[in-house]
Length: 262
Image 1: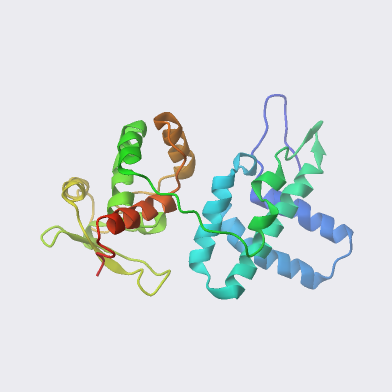
Image 2: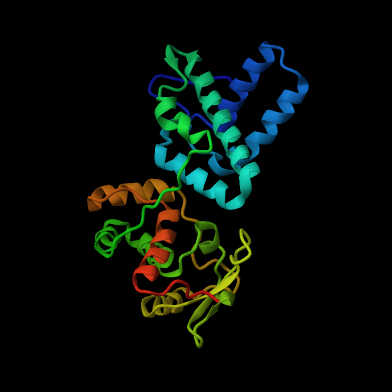
């Protein structure tokens, strides 16, 4: 990996950089070509998820979010086994960066064992059960930037994954029937219709001003970072988009309504 470091300038450590260093170390050990194909295959979900993010800024919450997302995509022991191998590859790549010094500094100076502890690369991982209480929700809403508050209302009011929210367009919203069609593909019940709460009904009407197929909620870049900052300002534990989706289900269960999707 060529470092383009200058005084006061430290480019982000991308997943491609970390993987390249790890693969280079395997090459020096004269691993078989089949091993490289194996590593490249396992790296695809990591590339897709972390993309252009700076790996130095990753937190345990980011890793748990990755696990949740991949768990939803995969099923059974084979899925858990693949996830374990992906996390091991990420950990090995970060360690390769920690062992590489450029301009007097390690490429990665974080604690890999704390970021990806051993229990997360095996089968013992337990999904997060974090959900907002009504009080936490009321505190978080004003702590977010004004243009992001509608996203919080939608996440909690619709119980959608972030990928599903970004696909919702005017053609999916039926204001007369007061419901929205959530186009999902991850599970057999992912494609569904969800009733609109009064505050969501009015909010959707206000956002339906562009073309019928334009996203009503354009992708929220740095969503996890912004949510973490908002939670810190609100004085509550951090949440991820999946936690907000879990909040929807939690509130329904507490109200005695197990499922309102059709």
